[in-house]
Image (tube, rainbow, N blue to C red; front, side, top):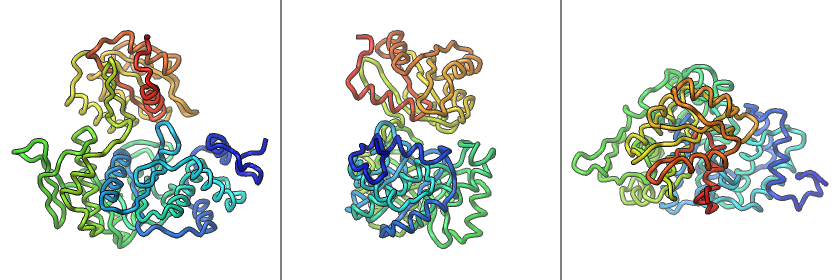
Length: 437
């Protein structure tokens, strides 16, 4: 059988392509721009009229979805490239909110492979290039590109941006980006460009961000300094956004759950202002766009005969936000937590914010080669929370256990990784609403 990408592999499926892509590079993650830049030059793609980068530790997916919705409401053809996916690879590449088809992605892979020669691209690099091919083919006017890891050496950074967002900085991917906030911030600041507008979306601003902006001459706008939000005192379901030169009132709460989404929304509006896209700073357009937002696996509630809450929180700050959301929306009964995570994650940082919200724990080994074994995770949970933790042999077993021991009115939280939340959502979407039946 010919491998996908060889001259005689025209009938290869997307799954076969994806399996083959995992063999191209000796390492899963290999930061650097040279390989992608070389292939981009060979592809000779027409550049979209507007390219926006989104980097940061948390909130990248939400920010991308908000930008995507605003441009769509304004009638702009918009492409979004995000990662990772929850269930289908196609979710990573969207045009006007719809995932690219298998055939579109395969055709893009073929084109990349035709010019790649012997360059050992990683899975993510190959996908980034394929997204660029698809965006050109579909006539995308605005491309929103979510950085996979870091910024300076991430594949996305090989595509020149017109503007961008750095949502926030916290400890994550320390093995690749650095062991402290300032070092990580320096890596993420690498998406900034001189003379172009960039927005930082957190009140705590690392020195490395400010220093890079000053050295480059970047038009940097910072949360709490150049823009902010407040809840309207007379209308708790409304909020006010204030930028450098604009003030918008009577804005409706975004459909995405959690007050922390107002920070993401404020950052997005600050970027729109910085890019001088005044026609998008229309409260009616903003309310229409943000009221229809959906983002799977982010404080997502699913109601069956149990109350399910699914969130991919995979670092300490994300777990704090999840804990705050759970406190704002408490369960009527007990809370069971099904959790799995990757080995490079901060186990204590993720578990600590959740321990007061969870009554019973179930540890599972996440999918993928970098998964933290369920037995080791369970031991850490027991030590940190002083509560017993079941070791599940599979996600299905974990779901069955949580369902059997819970009652209507109880909450079942699934968290810790895309590689746990995605399969759990797939199980729920499949119609298997009662695993005990």
